Length: 62
Length: 281
Image (cartoon, rainbow over all chains, first blue to last red; front, side, top):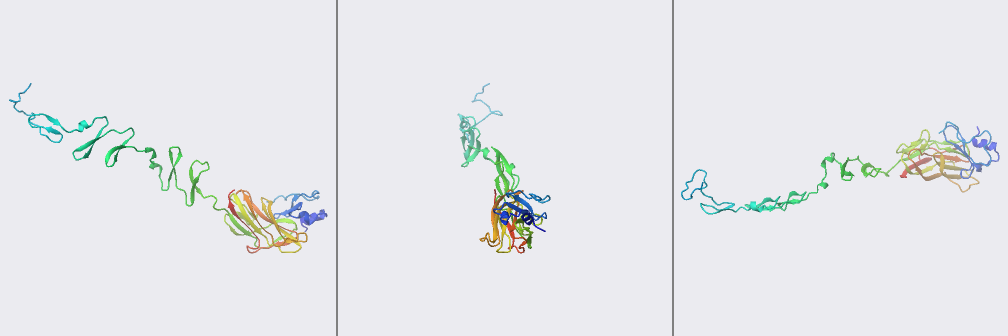
C-alpha cells in the first residue's frame, strides 16, 4: 500500500523531497498515530491539491 | 427650762463629762471640747476621697478627670487612665491557633488556623489575611518513554510518537494509553526535553518536533543526507513553553526522509519525552 507521500509524488511528479522538508517545505504531512492514517496538514505549494486528495484530518480523529 | 449648774442634779441621760481621746481635745467637767479630728475639714471639694496613709493618719485624694479610673500607683490610690480601645476582646478568639485581625476599621475578626504546610497570605481581593497552600513551590513533572520500537511507515510525514510507558508522572498529566500527550493541570512555564532514537544512515535525515495543541513549536533534526550533510546523530530537543493549566497539551512527533524506519524503544534513555513546571505565568 502506498503512503500518502508516495501518492502525492505520483500525482504531482514535479514534487521532490524538499517540498516536504520540515523547515522550508511547503507541504506538511502528518499522522497522529490514532489509526486514521496520514493526512495533509498544510498545503502551501504553488499548485492546488491534486484531485482526489483533501486538506485536513479525516473525521473521527483527536 | 434652764438648769443651774450649781444645784443641778444629774438625771438619767445627762452628760457628766467628756474624756479626750482620738479626735477630741479638752473634756473633763468644764471648759471647751474641741474636735481635733481634721478628716471632715480635709474634705474641701466635691469628689475628694480620704484614704489612710498610715496608723491614725490619712490624706485627701482630689477627684480625677473625666474617664479616669481609680488605680494604685507606688502603693497608694491614684487616678489613672486605661485605654480600653486597645483591649483584646477575648471572646473573638475561640480556638487554638486563632489569629485576631481587623475586618474593617475598629472591627476585630477571627481567622481560624490553617492546615499543615499552609502559609499566611492575602486573599484575592486584598481585603483580609487567609491561609493558603504556598504558591510557586512545585508543579507537575513527568517522563514518558517508548516501550518498544515504533514503525514510521511513511517518509516525510510527521508522525506522533506513541510514548506508551511512564517513568514518572507526578500529577497524572501524561496520557500514555490513548493520545500520548502531556496536559498539565497547573498554569506556568514548562521545560521540555525529548529525544528519539532513529537509525543513523548517511542517506536520510530525521526530525523531531514538539507540538503544542497540535502545532509545531520546536523542532530539531539528526542524521544526514546528501543535501544536508552537516546533520548527524539522533535528534533531541529542549524547549520552554507556557501552558494554561487546563486545555494546553504537548506531544512529540517524528519525521524521517526514509520510509519504514523504526523509532527505537526500550529503556528510558532510548526514546523519551520529559517535562517539568518551572514557574507561574
